[in-house]
Image (cartoon, rainbow, N blue to C red):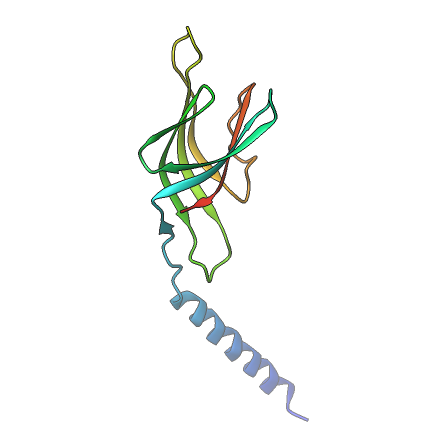
Length: 128
């Protein structure tokens, strides 16, 4: 039976080796996409639509104008996570245009920073 001090020393060496390996592995940067894939809900009609919003271009859903400024997702061999920076304006007829959302949305946590609108919901599904 090995001596207890040798077991403790061996365990400490294994811990140090794994710590050194963890410190040398750098997370890879997210993959930037050409478009954000969004899901939009019209709460009045219960219409759900899948929208592709090319980066920097305006897409419309009802009275909303949505512009995806960036969309990032982790590489395929890492835990899935998608984030998008969106700017959303409401343009109802005969009323001034109003910015109703400007910020980051997360596909894994849609309630973390959500669009708060009486008629519409917009969430991020992924990037393309």
